[in-house]
Image (cartoon, rainbow, N blue to C red; front, side, top):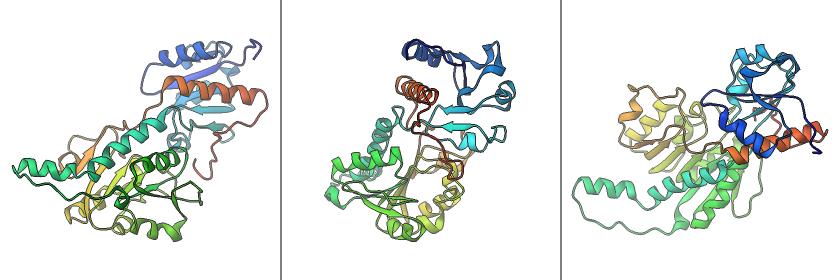
Length: 315
């Protein structure tokens, strides 16, 4: 790095103070001049933006941007923002400490259902004492929608419990111990062998509404659905109908089309739905800053770092 100072980077976050991010950038990459977007003296000189859900005002302030670094894995908010110039390259966080958190999140809920904790809670309410039959872990068939960085690591992690793990993605993936399905022609077969469906897909035109009645009804009776992808993946009315018809045993939802979820929404009251407030995995300062700083330095050094978003594919 030779202590060289690079072009100033503008930092924007929509949900919290920029101070923790600024401190971490200064700690790890003192030669990078990362500043809060509102406090930059010469915005026309800024080529790099580090952002989470930037507003139109951000792009109006920095007319000469060439590159954006997204403070998270999902880039749908940026890609759907008409204010983002089409020539600007977008890089996403491929892990940022989120993989371990996502493994914990899905493990918790999958074990909850595998060990019949929902049924034991029902028994408790009825003051009923009954030991349910034990099922070998190998009979619990987990299916992961989306085998990107997070999905692939989840698939590997879940094998440690002895679960029968499969994954589906747009293109065939080779993961040791994981049955791989790909493309629209293999989706039905994937769903029919899945007792617990875990959604970690990116949001694209092809994946929007993929958790609909037609697809979820392909799951075996008594299956569960866990969505930590995006709210737009799930057709909520279809899910609730399948729960009420007892085709689905339960659901866990972490992401919603409207966040925060309105207090009058029917999901709050449904007894078979568990919810979390988009908290399955959060970007951690240290690994995120390390990834962005190294990627930025690679770009400056005319290298080709990973994480570049393909706008046509949507991820």
